[in-house]
Image (cartoon, rainbow, N blue to C red):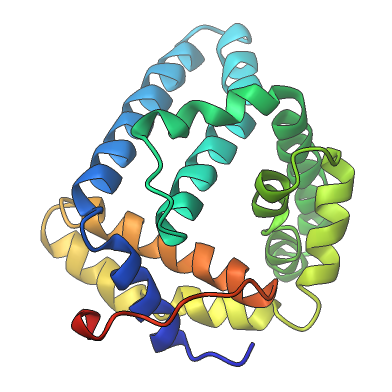
Length: 205
């Protein structure tokens, strides 16, 4: 990766110009839907099945939306639900990522964290390549993240200060932090996959 962490964040801020309101609203819609699904967990057994079946599709749709913001494609808020059009593949990615990460975590917490970063790009790969299968998306993520897991980990660490600031606002600040975080992460994916990205507009600095 030839770009600095601050440059990735600058790209994210530039992508979010004019899209903050839409991104926050999409986050709220996602949170409401996830919360409603979470209510099902109050129903023994059935609730957890519903949550398990829908998490992959919701996660994929969430990523599709914020990748669209990063690429300035003007995605509609309804894009948050677009993962359901690839329901089985999204479910497969969620299932295998959960199993593989859990198995590595049984060895110790560090291997589990490494596994999380190894498979972290699977949803991004799937949204760009909807014709591939879940295991192939995970395999490509594993290849893509060779030598890059630490870079993504450090990128995540650069947001710690923002997390503390968001906590000082009694959580309200997370409405801005989450879009900033996920759009930056989308730019990370585009950077390591070699996607051509236009330079940030001078006004964004």
